[in-house]
Length: 307
Image (cartoon, rainbow, N blue to C red; front, side, top):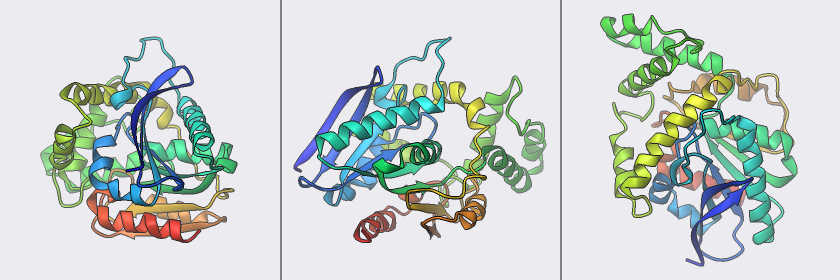
């Protein structure tokens, strides 16, 4: 492999872990923006999307405070979504300068799609094409739909407990309520297609040579602290009034995603008045890139060939 680097890079005063993989020099830059918040994805991408390094200079960024970029957020440290947008800007500036390219492909998932859409609104001149996988549209609506699905499809005793959850996730118990809801959505196969748990993904983290057990423990801590810091702001996210972008957008959705409603994403997509493409993944829930990895990789290669 011509480029195979794993390093900490100082981005806006914070050391953040970046992996860069490419079969040969000169391949177009593809930057992956992971979800969560805090759900760093290097082991999964190395396992399922390594093929993309034959066609792209594939860049995996573990965001501040997450995964191999973990550091403990201070009690009074202010962490906001725009910090991640500006981190991404600094990263793309570094990459385009180093690899002598003027733009990148941006591939985002889940929480990363919040960063991604905000980024292309602010810095469209740096992005060739945006691919949003399990796109966030209106987070309050998405959470109400997530909760409704769990209540309607759970046994009565479980549904009764879920009925006590505040759908705004703004009360004192919001973190525990969120954990309870997400566990139930996973049991209902709304997260991983035809699977009631995430063990298949967790095993990949534990077997990954790039991740030690210490890294995995920090990965888990990174999710918890990122959710705690960012969730109140995430709940306010709403892109519904934004219907035009200066960058071509591609939405990739799992037909059975009940964590972030794919139906909500489709309604939003239909209102977008600029260049766009939509792709359904019929045997996927929240993670099309890992439920149907071969089909997903082939799609990414086709999107490149369209240029």
